[in-house]
Image 1 (tube, rainbow, N blue to C red):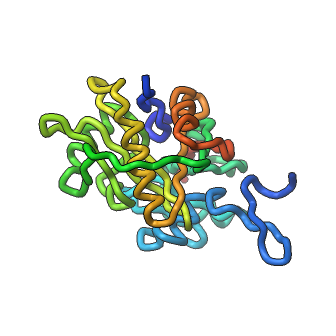
Image 2: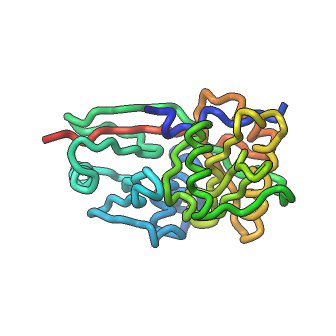
Length: 255
């Protein structure tokens, strides 16, 4: 199951404060928006998508599978997850580090990294074209063949998606997913296997980053910790390792 949530096939181009904490009023530290990126998105720029049960938030499942817990998750929040998702449903959680209640099955637990902007030189891509709802069947087909991570029928609504076509066929794409205040995640970076080695992923990442910077925000992204090829690519493009994270899934108890 982890392959459905963790990108592993990107193209290669030939002290006590929480990680990332920022100073708050009177010297206090406040969590960085990227520390709980899904929740920061759903309480910020993506609030229009938010479905809520108690303190638990999620995207509509046809938009994104991610569910967002509060930082101080407790027993009542797990009860709300169960009521929201339904018995026997698998629930993916981004970055959850705590225990799970008895009776909840862990379905996958994959080490990941979060990388943020450390001088990414975004640039427009002349060959890239905007992708929208009419392109979703082709986007879903490309995702199914390349497995870049979760992509659902309405994921395209989360932000700007760009693609490259050859002879009319979609052969590469990249776009925007989570949007914590001041930041936008680059996601769904994928290339048809027949066209790898041309640097299409690099060009699309830089084009998406350019659009993010144009509206005054900064790009970030996630990938698997074992995905060393992608990490090297991202470092070469100006991303840096920010924190280690987890791609984590649980199944709601049946009773």
